[in-house]
Length: 304
Image 1 (cartoon, helix red, strand yellow):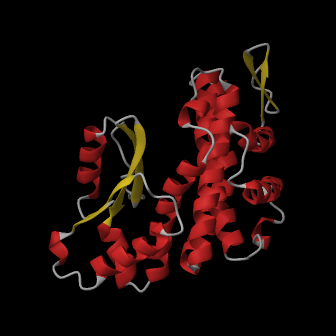
Image 2 (cartoon, helix red, strand yellow; image 1 turned 60 degrees about the horizontal axis):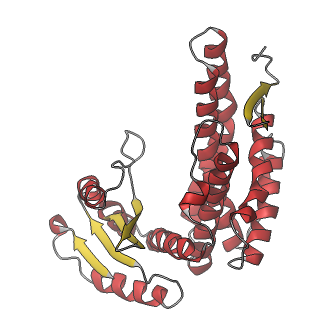
Image 3 (cartoon, rainbow, N blue to C red; image 1 turned 90 degrees about the vertical axis):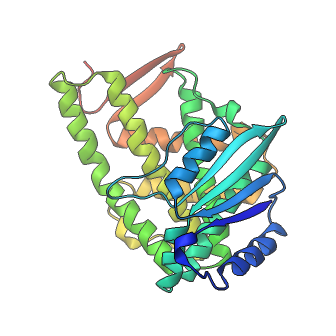
């Protein structure tokens, strides 16, 4: 494993490189990181990330919007017939956290990405087992949701167990609350577009997946952080339509964790399928696969 620093404009980094090497050395004793090739800290995050993606033959892209900047990315690729990994970190954000006395949050972020590598090594199924092959592939759509929810839960559970970051937890809880408030509104706007003929059912289902996938993924983060820190769900959700989803995920993720890593296969994460389907129903979409055909009904009475 190579640890590389491309942080020229910051001048003397002091004890940061040594601190990182010692921290990763300790974590390597606890996690399976044998096939991790590179950990890169760079101030040119987007440029260096895209160069590695191109080099490894991966899809090029990263988060970079007005409101959201990429912090870290785990890259998975095949090298000499073996699955390998590289991690790329936005050094500007990591060093900014440390400078603003959020060291625990920085360590949490590093630990989170390393656990993703460990988890991928422990899973008894591969990305091919959950690859979505066509529009009607509801089974693998739901498995992809479940895999993401589990992965985010476990990464943040392990990171929070090692170092508690209340700043990270507060930010994640805020994101879940905001997502809960905006999901119905955004889908209602899409339904209005459908009714007026400006969107078809295929587009509507695609957006339903995108909106709820992000929310459930962040919820996995949230529950992992809470359980890792031995905290309970916030009472802020007690009267929310999202409370049943939170309770179900809390229960099923706990069961999955208790049996991890001795899972049977991809069928283990299928226990999360019903949670995704039930959330879609709560939001007004009854999605079913009948005789190989995808049927989407809705309480909004828009599909007749």
